[in-house]
Image 1 (cartoon, helix red, strand yellow):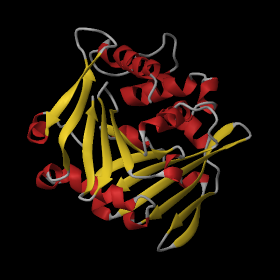
Image 2: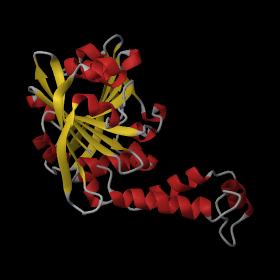
Image 3: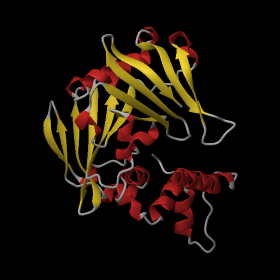
Image 4: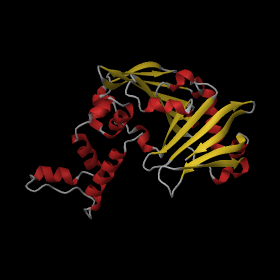
Length: 283
Protein backbone atom coordinates (compact mmCIF):
# COMPACT_ATOMS: atom_id res chain seq x y z
CA UNK A 1 0.00 0.00 0.00
CA UNK A 2 1.42 3.43 0.87
CA UNK A 3 5.20 3.07 0.45
CA UNK A 4 7.06 3.24 3.75
CA UNK A 5 9.60 5.51 2.10
CA UNK A 6 6.95 8.17 1.50
CA UNK A 7 5.67 7.88 5.07
CA UNK A 8 9.24 8.36 6.34
CA UNK A 9 9.83 11.28 3.98
CA UNK A 10 6.63 13.02 5.06
CA UNK A 11 7.41 12.60 8.76
CA UNK A 12 10.99 13.80 8.26
CA UNK A 13 9.85 16.89 6.41
CA UNK A 14 7.29 17.69 9.10
CA UNK A 15 9.97 17.47 11.78
CA UNK A 16 12.30 19.65 9.75
CA UNK A 17 9.62 22.26 9.15
CA UNK A 18 7.82 22.28 12.48
CA UNK A 19 9.99 20.79 15.20
CA UNK A 20 13.04 22.96 14.60
CA UNK A 21 11.20 26.30 14.80
CA UNK A 22 9.49 27.43 17.98
CA UNK A 23 7.09 29.67 16.09
CA UNK A 24 6.05 26.82 13.74
CA UNK A 25 6.69 29.14 10.79
CA UNK A 26 8.96 28.31 7.86
CA UNK A 27 12.42 29.83 8.02
CA UNK A 28 13.24 32.70 5.69
CA UNK A 29 16.14 32.16 3.26
CA UNK A 30 19.14 34.42 3.79
CA UNK A 31 19.08 37.35 1.40
CA UNK A 32 15.39 37.04 0.57
CA UNK A 33 13.68 40.23 -0.57
CA UNK A 34 10.93 41.96 1.39
CA UNK A 35 8.17 40.53 -0.81
CA UNK A 36 9.53 37.02 -0.38
CA UNK A 37 9.83 37.42 3.38
CA UNK A 38 6.26 38.70 3.65
CA UNK A 39 4.92 35.85 1.54
CA UNK A 40 6.77 33.15 3.47
CA UNK A 41 5.56 34.46 6.82
CA UNK A 42 2.01 33.86 5.64
CA UNK A 43 2.71 30.21 4.85
CA UNK A 44 1.66 27.49 7.27
CA UNK A 45 3.94 24.48 7.90
CA UNK A 46 1.50 22.34 5.88
CA UNK A 47 1.68 24.78 2.96
CA UNK A 48 5.46 24.61 3.08
CA UNK A 49 5.42 20.81 3.22
CA UNK A 50 3.17 20.63 0.17
CA UNK A 51 5.41 23.09 -1.67
CA UNK A 52 8.46 20.93 -0.96
CA UNK A 53 6.66 17.77 -2.08
CA UNK A 54 5.60 19.44 -5.33
CA UNK A 55 9.23 20.30 -6.09
CA UNK A 56 10.39 16.71 -5.60
CA UNK A 57 10.82 14.78 -8.88
CA UNK A 58 8.06 12.23 -9.41
CA UNK A 59 9.29 8.64 -9.36
CA UNK A 60 8.98 6.63 -12.56
CA UNK A 61 7.18 4.02 -10.42
CA UNK A 62 4.20 6.38 -10.24
CA UNK A 63 3.14 5.23 -13.69
CA UNK A 64 4.12 1.62 -13.18
CA UNK A 65 2.23 0.74 -10.02
CA UNK A 66 -1.16 2.23 -9.25
CA UNK A 67 -0.53 2.37 -5.50
CA UNK A 68 2.54 4.54 -6.08
CA UNK A 69 0.59 6.71 -8.49
CA UNK A 70 -2.40 7.29 -6.22
CA UNK A 71 -0.22 8.25 -3.28
CA UNK A 72 1.59 10.84 -5.40
CA UNK A 73 -1.76 11.98 -6.78
CA UNK A 74 -3.11 12.58 -3.26
CA UNK A 75 -0.04 14.35 -1.85
CA UNK A 76 1.13 16.49 -4.76
CA UNK A 77 -1.28 19.25 -5.77
CA UNK A 78 0.52 20.05 -9.03
CA UNK A 79 0.76 16.40 -10.06
CA UNK A 80 -2.93 15.87 -9.26
CA UNK A 81 -4.02 18.67 -11.56
CA UNK A 82 -1.78 17.37 -14.34
CA UNK A 83 -3.27 13.88 -14.08
CA UNK A 84 -6.95 14.74 -14.51
CA UNK A 85 -8.43 14.58 -17.99
CA UNK A 86 -10.24 17.93 -18.15
CA UNK A 87 -13.00 18.64 -18.85
CA UNK A 88 -13.73 15.77 -16.47
CA UNK A 89 -17.01 13.87 -17.03
CA UNK A 90 -19.02 13.62 -13.80
CA UNK A 91 -22.00 11.29 -13.84
CA UNK A 92 -24.83 11.57 -11.35
CA UNK A 93 -27.75 9.16 -11.41
CA UNK A 94 -30.13 12.04 -10.72
CA UNK A 95 -28.64 14.90 -12.71
CA UNK A 96 -27.02 13.04 -15.59
CA UNK A 97 -23.64 14.11 -16.91
CA UNK A 98 -21.67 17.29 -16.26
CA UNK A 99 -18.21 18.37 -17.40
CA UNK A 100 -15.91 19.74 -14.72
CA UNK A 101 -13.46 22.40 -15.90
CA UNK A 102 -9.89 22.63 -14.66
CA UNK A 103 -10.49 25.95 -12.93
CA UNK A 104 -13.37 24.42 -10.94
CA UNK A 105 -11.40 21.45 -9.60
CA UNK A 106 -10.54 21.54 -5.89
CA UNK A 107 -7.46 19.68 -4.68
CA UNK A 108 -8.49 16.48 -2.88
CA UNK A 109 -6.50 14.28 -0.50
CA UNK A 110 -9.12 11.55 -1.00
CA UNK A 111 -8.68 8.80 1.60
CA UNK A 112 -5.61 10.37 3.25
CA UNK A 113 -8.06 12.35 5.39
CA UNK A 114 -9.49 9.10 6.79
CA UNK A 115 -8.03 7.00 9.60
CA UNK A 116 -8.14 3.81 7.54
CA UNK A 117 -8.04 2.53 3.99
CA UNK A 118 -10.34 -0.41 3.32
CA UNK A 119 -10.16 -2.71 0.32
CA UNK A 120 -12.70 -5.44 -0.46
CA UNK A 121 -11.21 -8.51 -2.13
CA UNK A 122 -12.82 -11.73 -3.32
CA UNK A 123 -10.03 -13.88 -1.90
CA UNK A 124 -6.45 -13.49 -0.68
CA UNK A 125 -5.06 -14.43 -4.10
CA UNK A 126 -6.37 -11.07 -5.34
CA UNK A 127 -3.61 -9.38 -3.35
CA UNK A 128 -1.35 -9.88 -6.35
CA UNK A 129 -3.49 -7.34 -8.25
CA UNK A 130 -2.56 -4.68 -5.72
CA UNK A 131 1.11 -5.05 -6.68
CA UNK A 132 0.64 -5.58 -10.40
CA UNK A 133 2.31 -3.28 -12.89
CA UNK A 134 0.09 -4.56 -15.70
CA UNK A 135 -3.13 -2.80 -14.70
CA UNK A 136 -4.65 -0.28 -17.08
CA UNK A 137 -7.87 0.58 -15.23
CA UNK A 138 -8.54 1.06 -11.50
CA UNK A 139 -11.46 2.58 -9.61
CA UNK A 140 -11.19 4.23 -6.20
CA UNK A 141 -14.57 3.91 -4.50
CA UNK A 142 -15.82 6.14 -1.69
CA UNK A 143 -18.79 4.89 0.36
CA UNK A 144 -20.82 7.45 2.32
CA UNK A 145 -23.37 5.15 3.96
CA UNK A 146 -25.42 7.77 5.90
CA UNK A 147 -26.03 9.60 2.61
CA UNK A 148 -26.59 6.35 0.65
CA UNK A 149 -23.91 7.46 -1.78
CA UNK A 150 -21.07 5.82 -3.68
CA UNK A 151 -18.55 8.02 -5.48
CA UNK A 152 -16.30 6.32 -8.01
CA UNK A 153 -13.03 7.96 -9.07
CA UNK A 154 -12.07 6.22 -12.29
CA UNK A 155 -8.46 6.02 -13.47
CA UNK A 156 -7.06 4.70 -16.74
CA UNK A 157 -3.53 4.43 -18.04
CA UNK A 158 -3.22 6.35 -21.28
CA UNK A 159 0.04 6.28 -23.23
CA UNK A 160 1.77 4.91 -20.14
CA UNK A 161 0.40 7.64 -17.83
CA UNK A 162 -2.27 7.17 -15.16
CA UNK A 163 -5.10 9.71 -15.51
CA UNK A 164 -8.38 10.31 -13.71
CA UNK A 165 -10.93 10.01 -16.51
CA UNK A 166 -14.33 10.36 -14.81
CA UNK A 167 -16.29 10.49 -11.55
CA UNK A 168 -19.54 8.60 -10.99
CA UNK A 169 -22.07 9.02 -8.17
CA UNK A 170 -24.91 6.58 -7.44
CA UNK A 171 -26.88 4.95 -4.57
CA UNK A 172 -25.26 2.12 -2.60
CA UNK A 173 -27.87 -0.40 -3.72
CA UNK A 174 -26.77 0.17 -7.33
CA UNK A 175 -23.25 -1.02 -6.51
CA UNK A 176 -22.36 -4.40 -8.03
CA UNK A 177 -21.41 -5.75 -4.57
CA UNK A 178 -24.21 -4.01 -2.65
CA UNK A 179 -25.19 -7.19 -0.78
CA UNK A 180 -21.81 -7.47 0.93
CA UNK A 181 -21.27 -3.70 1.31
CA UNK A 182 -24.57 -3.36 3.19
CA UNK A 183 -23.76 -6.43 5.26
CA UNK A 184 -20.32 -5.09 6.17
CA UNK A 185 -21.70 -1.74 7.32
CA UNK A 186 -24.29 -3.53 9.50
CA UNK A 187 -21.58 -5.85 10.85
CA UNK A 188 -19.34 -2.89 11.72
CA UNK A 189 -22.02 -0.85 13.50
CA UNK A 190 -24.22 -3.41 15.29
CA UNK A 191 -22.47 -5.60 17.89
CA UNK A 192 -25.46 -7.94 18.27
CA UNK A 193 -25.66 -8.45 14.51
CA UNK A 194 -21.89 -8.94 14.45
CA UNK A 195 -21.96 -11.71 17.06
CA UNK A 196 -24.74 -13.45 15.12
CA UNK A 197 -22.52 -13.60 12.01
CA UNK A 198 -19.47 -15.31 13.44
CA UNK A 199 -18.41 -18.88 12.75
CA UNK A 200 -18.48 -21.05 15.94
CA UNK A 201 -14.69 -20.89 15.90
CA UNK A 202 -12.55 -18.24 14.18
CA UNK A 203 -9.08 -18.98 12.83
CA UNK A 204 -6.82 -16.30 14.29
CA UNK A 205 -3.36 -15.42 12.92
CA UNK A 206 -1.04 -12.75 14.32
CA UNK A 207 2.65 -11.87 14.27
CA UNK A 208 4.95 -13.29 16.90
CA UNK A 209 6.38 -10.23 18.64
CA UNK A 210 9.36 -12.26 19.88
CA UNK A 211 10.31 -13.78 16.51
CA UNK A 212 10.49 -11.53 13.44
CA UNK A 213 8.66 -12.87 10.37
CA UNK A 214 7.05 -15.63 12.45
CA UNK A 215 3.31 -16.08 12.98
CA UNK A 216 1.16 -17.37 15.80
CA UNK A 217 -1.94 -19.24 14.71
CA UNK A 218 -4.84 -20.53 16.77
CA UNK A 219 -8.60 -20.76 17.13
CA UNK A 220 -10.97 -18.37 18.90
CA UNK A 221 -14.38 -19.31 20.18
CA UNK A 222 -17.04 -16.89 18.96
CA UNK A 223 -17.59 -15.55 22.49
CA UNK A 224 -13.89 -14.53 22.61
CA UNK A 225 -14.22 -12.30 19.55
CA UNK A 226 -15.09 -9.03 21.40
CA UNK A 227 -11.66 -9.13 23.07
CA UNK A 228 -9.87 -9.31 19.70
CA UNK A 229 -12.02 -7.43 17.20
CA UNK A 230 -10.35 -4.39 15.61
CA UNK A 231 -11.83 -0.98 14.95
CA UNK A 232 -13.92 -1.24 11.79
CA UNK A 233 -14.55 1.75 9.49
CA UNK A 234 -18.30 1.91 9.16
CA UNK A 235 -20.13 5.02 8.00
CA UNK A 236 -17.53 6.31 5.54
CA UNK A 237 -15.03 3.92 4.00
CA UNK A 238 -13.25 3.12 0.77
CA UNK A 239 -12.50 0.40 -1.72
CA UNK A 240 -9.97 0.17 -4.52
CA UNK A 241 -11.18 -1.99 -7.39
CA UNK A 242 -8.10 -3.34 -9.15
CA UNK A 243 -10.27 -5.73 -11.15
CA UNK A 244 -11.10 -8.18 -8.35
CA UNK A 245 -14.84 -7.49 -8.59
CA UNK A 246 -14.92 -9.17 -12.00
CA UNK A 247 -15.00 -12.55 -10.24
CA UNK A 248 -16.68 -11.96 -6.88
CA UNK A 249 -17.92 -15.26 -5.48
CA UNK A 250 -18.84 -16.69 -2.10
CA UNK A 251 -15.83 -15.28 -0.21
CA UNK A 252 -14.69 -11.79 0.79
CA UNK A 253 -11.52 -10.50 2.40
CA UNK A 254 -11.73 -7.04 3.98
CA UNK A 255 -8.33 -5.36 4.24
CA UNK A 256 -8.17 -2.54 6.80
CA UNK A 257 -4.95 -0.52 6.84
CA UNK A 258 -4.05 2.47 9.00
CA UNK A 259 -3.30 5.60 6.99
CA UNK A 260 -0.62 6.94 9.33
CA UNK A 261 0.58 3.80 11.14
CA UNK A 262 1.31 0.10 10.62
CA UNK A 263 -2.18 -1.05 11.60
CA UNK A 264 -3.23 -3.87 9.23
CA UNK A 265 -6.08 -6.34 9.63
CA UNK A 266 -7.64 -8.92 7.33
CA UNK A 267 -11.15 -10.22 7.94
CA UNK A 268 -12.31 -13.29 6.00
CA UNK A 269 -16.00 -13.88 5.28
CA UNK A 270 -17.89 -16.61 3.47
CA UNK A 271 -21.51 -16.88 2.48
CA UNK A 272 -23.53 -19.50 4.35
CA UNK A 273 -27.17 -20.29 5.11
CA UNK A 274 -26.98 -17.57 7.76
CA UNK A 275 -25.73 -15.03 5.24
CA UNK A 276 -22.15 -13.76 5.47
CA UNK A 277 -20.03 -15.20 8.29
CA UNK A 278 -16.62 -14.19 9.65
CA UNK A 279 -14.41 -17.28 9.88
CA UNK A 280 -10.81 -15.99 9.88
CA UNK A 281 -8.98 -12.96 11.25
CA UNK A 282 -5.35 -11.84 10.71
CA UNK A 283 -3.52 -8.89 12.20
